[in-house]
Image (cartoon, rainbow, N blue to C red; front, side):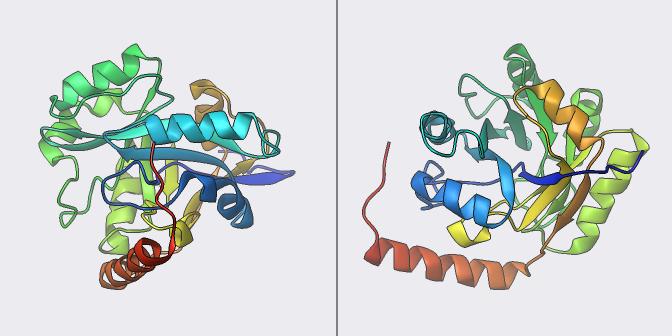
Length: 238
């Protein structure tokens, strides 16, 4: 891989918003918070939902952020054997399908298949190893740095698996609070990322970086932040 030169930017390809059942982060928080962390391309990958990502994408396109911030519509889909992320989606993919069926649904929309936190045995909803091997030739991107992983060694295992298959790797904050946005990212040459092909091209030129947080600390902090949000914030919804 030829080292990139010139202006760079950050992409975060895995995070959650108020559209996820386990997250309260308001959609309106994203542009300012992401830009403050240097993230200019953010994939919003809520659990089994895309309405939040769609609303945020539309808001950004019609706002002052349109030339500075890009939203990719994604979904962290709950298959029968663990989670798979689809990127560049137009329609929600229902949970409960097989991994193979989920991949077909993503590809039918022209989307990309991203393998999230796939090597951490303590991630209850990780894609099971047998399923991962069955769909290996359909995976487009491997998340090699997840900021919410139980141990850093599982990120390294994901990177090794991806490199052996010449697959691009990415960083994902897996943020479930607004403060966690941008905790992991891929640093790539600055250019527009409007299509799946745009994303694949820049990822091959990127470097994955991030800030790992011990899961116990992350859990306690999430509970504290969400308690404060429930007490002090307005109610956000669809």
